[in-house]
Amino acid sequence: MLNGRKLEFRSPGAGAEWHAVRIFAILLIMNAMALAGIFEFGERPLGTEANRQATEFLAREGERLGYEVERLPFKCVRWEKGPSAIFRGAEQLEVFAGPFSPAIDQWLDGVMVSTTQQLKRTNCKGKIVFLRGEIAKEPLMPLDFPFYFPDAHREIYALLDERQPAAVVAVTAKHPACGLEPYPLIDDANFRIPSAYMDAAALERMLAQKGRIRLRIDSKTFPETGEQLVIRKKAAGASKGKILIFAHMDTAYGTPGALDNAAGVAILLAAMGRLQDYAGPYDLEFIPFNGEDSPMVKGQLAYLERYGKEVGRVKLGINVDAAGAKGSKTAVSTYHLDDERLAWLDGEIAQYSLMERGPEWVESDHSIFVFRGVPCLALTSSTLRESVMALSHTPRDTVDLVDRALLVEAAEFIVRVVTDF
Ligand SMILES: [Zn+2]
Image (cartoon, rainbow, N blue to C red; front, side, top):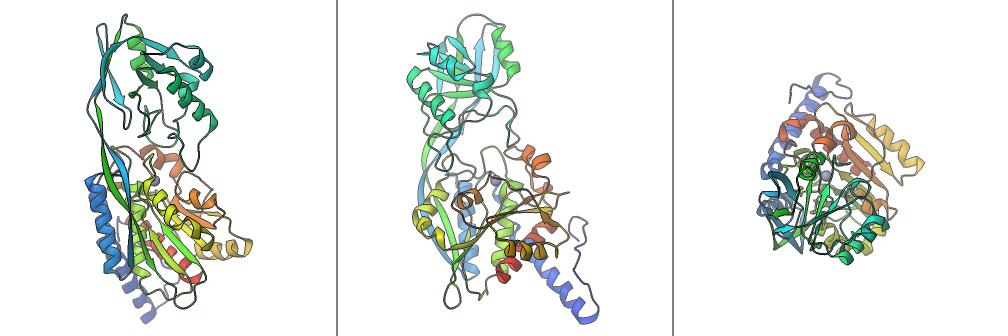
């Protein structure tokens, strides 16, 4: 019915029962369409006006549905960039400003570095250091990233700090986990050396020229504020713990973020709508995490600061990220569920024609809870690795890639899991 796809029902039956099922399905779809509002906000990184408007929209939806809405404020940084370039000899080459980079426009000498060992030995002071090859093979985690920070990355930051280059230009290819090509090696609001990135073809053209290099990075940051919402409903009677349902609402820069992750928030909203009269034994928290696609992860940190000590009370966390891609099913991966729960869950999944069990993955907010031993489910598109990741964080992540029928079914699945848990 939507996107030409007919919803399939478990046991269509006949007569009144069939009619009720059909009415119910139509209501569900109408509900999901009304909730499509989240797709209207477009690019919405932390600290932007669109991010604040999306937050207001979600807060109002929570209140309208009778939930208690808590706002946890945080400080963050917004980034604006203009065109950046390298000039050398006869060439003007396109480079891209590193996220949150300070601006620079200077004629400088350049040095090439391809390993950490080389960086230790190279005099970089006051020069442009070009990082390529081994040292630029994967994006660096933001400095002291709270959930994961490898020693190898710490060493690179420490060396850059010590060697004092005037600027860092990374030569990169395809990002391992999103569609950017080339990608920023450094994506960190606290890194104060001007940084940029370029592809190998641009580097070759630059190397064919002689003399000093003019690097112009047009980039600026602004202090801003944002909010992490927690939309909740208390258990009926004595509480047996919490169930968390979450989907990140922010985007990276330069993408409308339809699959990543307006679709997930639409599922969250649809589940909120269906669970407004929940009268079960668990406290429910709906959390539109604000910062999954930001190096600052501000919303997640604000949540953990306030509720981290209650993580032991969380009996189930359900994350939705990059679900709902046309041509996919919804893949449900599980973490820390015991055999009894797994058998029950398989029974639930089997009720839905567009859902299946999927492999574990760690790139999203469920990791925060999985690392703390919390039983979790993560819903994403079964085509995450082969197609969705190649679109994410690019201008191509648009609403026409989203299959509304998948959203409706995923929301229905979450409602059943929460109700039967
Ligand atoms: Zn995402």
